[in-house]
Length: 147
Image 1 (cartoon, rainbow, N blue to C red):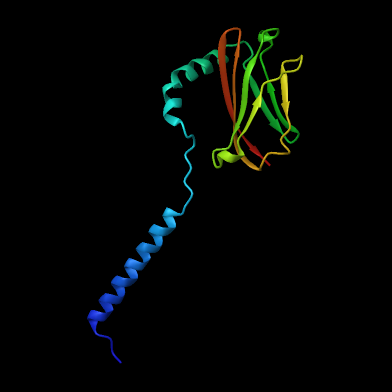
Image 2 (cartoon, one colour):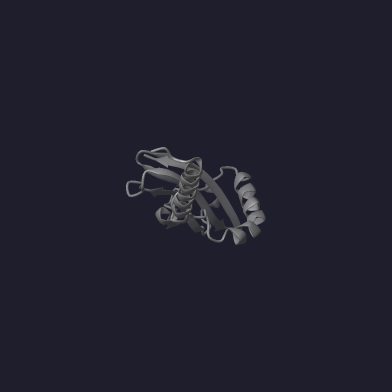
């Protein structure tokens, strides 16, 4: 039995519509996460963040973030020793915000904080150190890959 050209066009059209419906339903069920839920408010505070970064870089010994297989080490400037350092270390996972970790800064007498990484998921993190000392705010950030 030979199929008429009109039926061929109809079959092609129905196939095309079916494919479009498949892609639309699949895209509607895809999980879409923003990097940050309050990105607009963060954008308004961006100038303050830039000043904090510059203030950190102007220190004689800026805040250092080191990562090795044993863990993460954050070394604070010795010139801030004796001052009360308050702030957080945010281990930010861009791919999944449920895997973010927020740690309160608690340095030892050598102005170093050690963070074990064996409980972290493997992958990329942005380590964001945001703190205040002596009435000034400081910020630094480094990208690491936990293996």
